[in-house]
Length: 463
Image 1 (cartoon, rainbow, N blue to C red):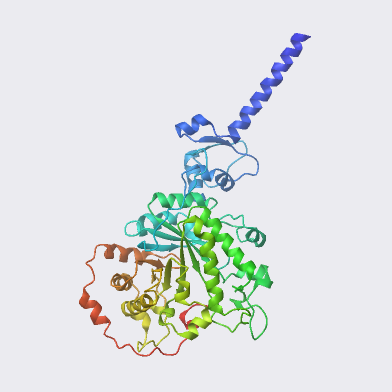
Image 2 (cartoon, rainbow, N blue to C red):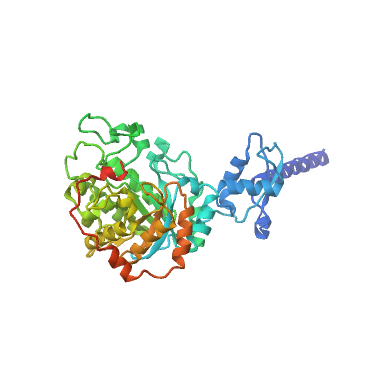
């Protein structure tokens, strides 16, 4: 009897150990495999897809995107298409035992940054490699990623309560932002993240009590057929955006860039009761400065190009008072897109066709505003064809030449759709070109500086 019990006990232990071994083979990462960098075997479960499996292991691989990892798994296992079956054994190309942790690389505020904007679609696709390797790395040092876009969507998984409540992070394009940031750091790039602040259709729809109201109708201001703007003075709106900024700073980004840090220009709104618009916008930036200070990230803001002319009506409408904002921002990035100035402008029938003059004049005026401030001037460059009769590489080079002769510290190329084919050719030529000749600068700036003609930022192509 004792022998039979001993045999049964041994048999049970054998089954347990066997089951545990199978469990480990499908759930755990073997240390010897990690040491040899040979990956591991995943046993497919019923209902699993390649996408789901890729998300599970993504943080432990060298892949930059989920699509890239799916491609690697297919190639490694000889899979055509996406069809896999239960109990199928898949080789997974693991390269580390724990997820990578990115760290902020602090920069001085006058760091000369030369970069491009990368939207959420490029961030989550193989295009990110082309943008990094072919467009910016050969001549620049910076990428500005989408953090929160103009629909109110976050590009990364978030633990911010309100973001989860309204579904802002329901569809992140990068499941592991630490990994993407680390990859970009390894490429020697300064990593900024753009947050669209007070234009937030998702928040305005899901939390209508936070929406900015029209003075004429008393209802939420509508853009593109639905509520779009939230109230910059509302504590919940401010807290929401500050929490997102702090969360990103904790992920290791180097810069937080605030876009739409303003009021709308297209409709009369119910005026704030306790302060003027520019005071509310400046107060928000002051709060951000204080809360982000421990992370050592740079703080940059996007402003209208027209703000360089300092018209009181533009300041009152947008809330962007440069001298006040410059006290709390490390970098001011004006959107000096020649095509976005109203026509005619200062005697120029079509400013979109005068890239050198428009950029030179705007930079001169911005430099005067920021002369005694702590902020660095780093403009956005027009890398898209809107409002231009002849958009080509020379159009971009003319803007770069204007910036080269100004008191700016670098530049950023903007193409909302990340169509940087023309820009790439321009940057290649610019990189090998001769410095700007002073006589060229003098000749183009002889245009009479006439009084600014009446216009509104609403005419600049922005809501």
